[in-house]
Image (cartoon, rainbow, N blue to C red):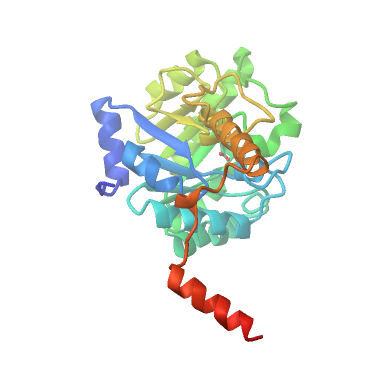
Length: 286
Ligand code: KIV
């Protein structure tokens, strides 16, 4: 596989300035990471969505910093040059600025991330400012913020009404003023995303289910490849049904083993006749 030049903040801002759209995907494991690097994905998010896609929880809320470290370290080993963003799990930054700085620091020190992401608007501006002041690039996350799914009334579009849209636009401004280098807008109407993107000065806007006007797009890897059978969000595009391919392979394996057509000679290791005869002789002595 070819080695990609390190993606940095200046790479991202240059793309924004040039109007070249930025690609971002979630990634949670070592084997997937080099494929994303080879495909040229700019930003890789080790999302706390791994609680659902990798650990089988019903929400992201049970995910811990230790879970995130294990996965972020594995992804970094698989993609040394990606711009790697570590997602702050539930209650690792909400309690205080200090908790935010300490946990953000773990992503940088223990997993060699390039940045962290946290959810929330103006109410999180002091956490963002604290983490940024500690020298850690910080990405915001507005719209549908899964850690607040209960308060938001479920996984639904946010900002359809003018007042709610106004609040999201104000939150984006507050995050940018607090120092975020990027904001993820998840499931907000395309027109709201366009306003935020046009108004953003020093902040890259990445959209998920928020239309084509952002500076870049994010998809969840498992949605792209049919690897999360419990649920397929409407905004996700399935680029290849790898889940079905894997299931077909598994069924074939079960059929072949039970039907005695696997293994074949190329799948096992033999022994020379003379060694075998000698072995039988040795066993006869028993
Ligand atoms: O955890 C995650 O993968 C995220 C996505 C929902 C964007 O934050």
